[in-house]
Image (cartoon, rainbow, N blue to C red; front, top):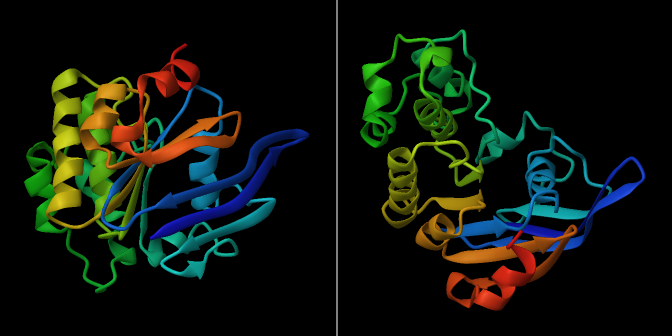
Length: 231
């Protein structure tokens, strides 16, 4: 579904991503892991075109997208939930969800019913401003907004950060449901190891901008955790 091939990225003189190769398997959840500052969010921003890559390639559904603009990538079938949610606090829940409607492949302008099936609280709060929601509700809104376009690939940057445990549980259940029932491919950045193991089929472990280990989630052993995840 998605292949990151030999990607290099810099911030000024700092080399952030080093010849990075990552593959996201269709219909599976791949978890991108590593300590803070190793390049996880930078990689997601490269995939979304927010940071143009210095070299290498990003291939989505068999086609290179490295020259596609940020605005074009949702039209290609990529939904993105950034770190910190980034909803529009002064817009209502309904207005936040409607932002993605012009991108829908079938051209309809109706929020899909399955959004409210996944997140019933959003239907109850359609006319409430996004900024008045709790952190957990805002995260559900951010995920719902990304799903409005019915993407082929959903990218989530630390969706459990600062979220109450019961909502974390719900988000985990929804990711698995999207994988198992809807066949949605997911790329997830996650720091919480139990959550990663619950939802992830595959993992890629980053350290200093390089992929140091990857494979099925069962292969994420205690030695790798101690070397690259334990602070």
